[in-house]
Length: 232
Image 1 (cartoon, rainbow, N blue to C red):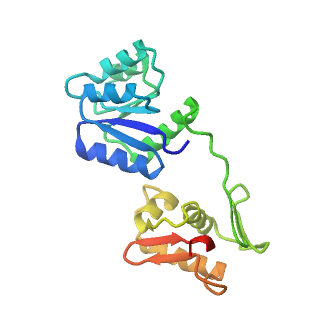
Image 2: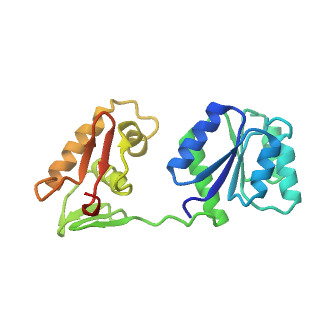
């Protein structure tokens, strides 16, 4: 379920902020710990998942895993560490961690791993394909098609992905950088104005604004948001 409580135990502030930012954007509710005792206290307080640095002050990460498992606590644990040795990885998994991620890391990959582990643990439901309806507009993720009043808009794959991303976050302003990352991929190195070009094409396909306020609204200097009829 969304708002699942995740403890991010990391004493390096920039890394902790990065993880919290990306998890928060996916709907997780994060609590932060900067040392071992705080990580244990928060993990014992009903957390759905623990993201754990091994090099925390006061209590070593391995000891935290051992303690939680010895207490019978089954919350998923994802170790996030600079220790790249195979021995450390094996030890971490053998004492009860569910995954082991080595720094430097991809934030998108880390979030994907956390979501997969959370689903297996029952914290998140397995996602089904979206089927979104806004008045006469239907967006069908499984069928990879969008229709207005039953007429297929015949969107190209990237146009459909962009519309689906915006419509899945109604009323929320998404930056061009965020849209590039989610639709084009983390490694895309093109210009952010690529988003503008695709939004213009989408507006033409939707005939957006011809029958009332536009569904795709520009947030000047930032990006775009999808505004369904109820939020206009």
